[in-house]
Length: 306
Image (cartoon, rainbow, N blue to C red; front, side, top):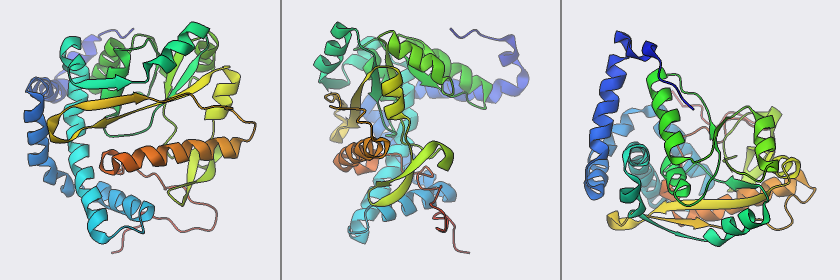
């Protein structure tokens, strides 16, 4: 449980609190107004040349067979989605439960209920869509689970992040590096949120194709499932067109997982993620260094030409 520190009231934190107040007020606007605002201000994101370049490189690498116009459309939608993520996180953190409930539909809850009935732990396999926090909030309205947590450098934002996530995540928040606690919770029959689609370096990863690109992919999912005696149940969410809200899908648990072959298990996860990304490619978080770590001898992919 988070505790408020008087140090957060120091004058140097005033801009952060003002920003949080504006964020809260914006989050209370009607949903379709928020979508329209995100569309209006999204071109400002192009000022972040580093992230824009990163997103463009990632999209070009993953969809080489698409036309320039098709890839540009995904990039444009990515810029909007990354802007909309600010509003979606505000919705996740600041909306009432009743208001949020009206914003989405969910299917596949029977897979979570079956795991609960059997008393078996489950890794809730997520992925980095831009509306990740909102997906976790929607999930928390339907199931009791534990979340993973990475501290933020800004202490005010860190306090808000932890307290608001505790509000919609019924279980505990597990520090990202506390693997022992995660395994313990899984063995107790708990459900634990987990998203492995980040580049954490070669030491923790296997090079496995993701849209045909050799990608340093966290390979621990199968180990966690084995050590925690847990099922792996993927879930995804996507934003619907025309301001119609969201749909969440709880997918069937992976069968015969872990298989005993760490590479094949990791490849299977990447292939699942590929299929889900293709359903809404502009909503994936492309503005991350997904392919930063390269196999030995390969040149860096994000080097910008001068």
